[in-house]
Structure formats: structure tokens, C-alpha cells
Image (tube, rainbow, N blue to C red; front, side, top):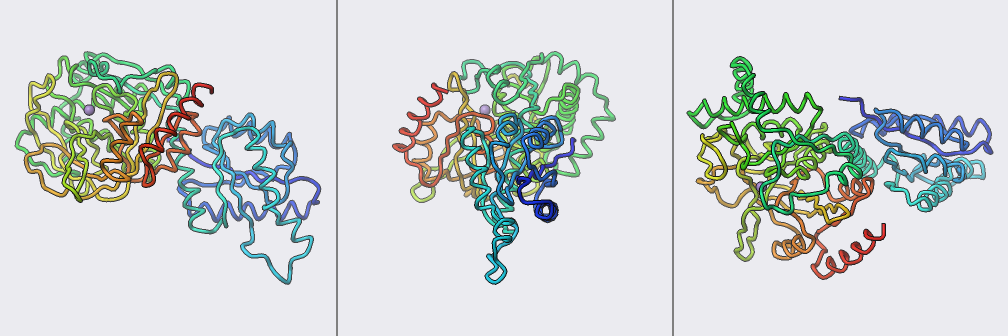
Length: 488
Ligand code: MN
């Protein structure tokens, strides 16, 4: 894993003299160090920029440095923005404008014109903001006192968004076979996805995977199965099925790692030479941060890996999900999500069980082993990336997940139950209006603000369905957006 850091770049000018500039630099270094203690990734003070050439140079370095995931700018003093123009225009890394100031309070007795000249973020950040607006440059603007919990929390979230940007720009997806026949929403323009999102999406033959599976040794399978036994409860006597999944996992991981892929897709319609659809294998790979999409859905697969990388320790509670069926009892209305096998255990409320059951769909000769569990309760989102023809649209809906309201003892797969906002019926109407897929990424630790910021940086359309959305308002919004995105 590359080191991931953020650069703190301060705006000023030479007019104030060396003493002021030294104070600015000292304070910026102190702030970066203190803020870093509350952030998931370090913020490193780099420079107090005073000229066009200094700013161009720091941007050039930021663009080139693979460990720099974004820059945070702030104007302690006034910093005339024409000197920022060339640098900001050329900036290729995500940008956050932190509008803050060193002191929390205006010191009643102490304040004089020297104090005003040194502490004029309110002045400097407006000039800085104008240039961002004038350049139409995507930027995150966070205003408030730099030690406040809320400011640090939002800065932390923005850092995670930048990790998602980096993951996206380096994304390679390994497809085993093509999409499920006749399905529309899992299709998409892979060239457009590479242009906008940086994804390299390519296909490998299932036969190549089978050859790789044949090379896996019994000792390697023993070792992975010991790992399964340590993490999960084994609730089946069919050890052979578990060992077969281990063989599949080792082979898929080996092929992906060889090619630098962080996500994969397969389809139950193309398992030629395999006796089980990977279930436990895909689930355990997802738990390690790999993205997965069923039925050849490479878009949801890449999004799963990206949203996982935006979570805790770069591998959060985000997972490939599918809307299956509704509970439509008044006052107790829920969606039940699952998949035929492949739900990531990062969503699990307890210790998952390994079970084997018959799987009627597809070409399975043997009963595939899979992890079965209940999803956690809590606030989250579901997200779906669709191809509108000429552009990509990311749809995000706020949800409230609950402990499943019934045990469903005969359901042989992992399950998550939630209520979409604003309510189930309105939420479904909005989702269908926007064209959202049945496949989503369900996440407990990526929220709508983060996905909006991510979409803005990637320059794709973003649609949010939340507590205040109505189908009428959404329809109008989509009409306007359709026009805008056709003009862009
Ligand atoms: Mn599916």
C-alpha cells in the first residue's frame, strides 16, 4: 500500500514582511500537526505561498507525488488570487478549501491593525474562493474553527473521499465472463468509465480461472480453511464444498493480484468447468477489500471496492447488495436485500456461519458453501452507478437498516433489512424515477455528502434521495440535469 498523505498549502503574499510570514508558517505547521491527530490520514504543512511560481511549483509536485491524495488550502492572511490561477488550473489532485482562522475569538483588548493584518482569513478566503468559483474547479469548502469536532469530522470524511478518488483512478476490474444475458442495467460504456473514473475493465476466460484453480495445492487450501474456521462458525458437514470455495478464492485472488485488479465480476451463466458458483470465496475476498458484482456487473463491483476503500482503515462496511423483496405491512415497511450467495461479511451483526445449500439457478453441479448472517442495524446508504448514454449517473439513497424483523430460518443466504428514506413507497418511486439498479453498494460508513463530493471530483452526475425528496421534485431535478449534462 502506498503512503497516503494530504498537503496543507497556505496562501499569503510578501507585503507583510518576514515576521508575519514566519508566524503564519509556524502556526500552519502547528495546525497541521494538531489536526492530523484527529484525521485518518496525515495533513502535512508544505509551504506558505507568496507568488505565482511558488504555487505552480507546489501544484506540480502535488500532481506528480503518488502519496499526495489531495491539497488543503487556507489563507491565514490575504493572498491575491491571480497568483493562484495557473496553479489551480493545472491542479489534478482533489482540493479542499479550509476557511478557518488560527484564533477562535476576537481578542477585545489586544486587537489592533497588526492583529487584523495577520488574522484576516475572512478576507483572504473570500479572494481564494472567488478564484475557485471563477475556474469552475471542483473543491470541498469547509468553514469553521479548525479545532472543532465538526470541522475535523468533515475534513476526515473528505480525506476518505480522496482515497476513493485514488482507488477509482487506479481501478482494474477482472471480469470472468460477460454480463448475464439480456440484463440492461448492468451494461455500460467501459471507455466512458475509463475516461471519467479511470477504471480499466477487461475480461478473462473462465477457462483460465479453472486452470489456475487446478494449480492450487491441498496445503494452500488447508491454510485458507484454517482462516475460515478462525473467522466463521462452520455449520455444515460438507467440508469438501468449503475446500472447493477455498480453491476458487485462492485462484481468483492470484489472478487479480497478478494483474493488479481490486474488483471482479462473474456470472452464474458462465461457470464452465467449475462445479460451484463462488459464494464463500467471493464473500471472503470482499472482506479483504476486493469489489464484487454478480451477473457480470462490473460497475457495482468497482464501486464496492471504491466505497470500501473510503471506510475505516481503507476497508469499511460497504458491500455489494441486491434489492430482493418487500415487507409491505403498514407501519412496518421494509426492503429485504440479499444475493444468491455473495454478501460481504463486513455488514454482519454477528459471527457469520458457513452453510451449504442447493442453488437452483445457474450451472452448479454441487451445493455451494456461503456465509449466512444478519446485517447490522444503523444509518447507511445504497448507491447505484448507471449509464445514461453519454454520461454516468450516481444515485445515492439514505437508508435506515434494522435488525431483520423475523428470523427467516429457511432463507439460505445473508440478509439485510432496511427502510429507504423518505419512506418505503416514496423511496421506491424516487429510486425507480432516477433509474437506479437492483444491484447497489450498501454502506454503513460512506454517506451522501461523501458520494456527492466523489461524483463532483470525477465529473459525473449525482442524484441524492433523502428525507426531503419527493418524486415530483426529483422528476424536475432530473429534467434539468438531463439538459445540463447534454450541454456539458
Ligand atoms: Mn444480482
